[in-house]
Length: 54
Image (tube, rainbow, N blue to C red):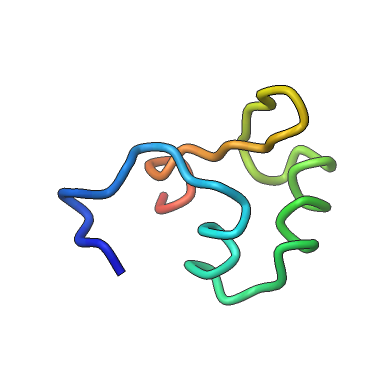
């Protein structure tokens, strides 16, 4: 895992799932229900590292 100081401020669903210890599908479902702050870029879901770690 990359140290926080070198980590990108944007995370993918896979990275969020690994960080939280849940399945990637759970992350997508939570994002669709607006339970996790996210942005869509085309078909991709992107998550703010800062928002996830709060």
